[in-house]
Length: 127
Image (tube, rainbow, N blue to C red; front, side, top):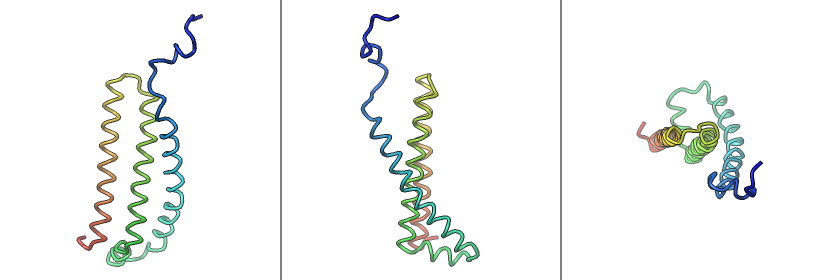
């Protein structure tokens, strides 16, 4: 039995300031991913038998390019939020946690950047 108050026991266990913000962003990205994914799957099935030139023309449409970029950004940001929670909750060594968080954030940022640049390159006709 401890003589410390409940507040005294939780002090020093980390910040409780960004939990609601993190939770809200995770839910908002999940809500955004659902219609974007349905649109993307439908688009893939619709254009399944198109040749390369037709796909490039389709991605060249401003609306399609914007939706693809929105899907890429939402998926990678949602993945970052989810993986951050997993790393923070299940890795207890501070050095390992920091290294994994940095590697995860850099890897996902690089992947998102690659996807967005690819869509923009095709959209602007440099493919």
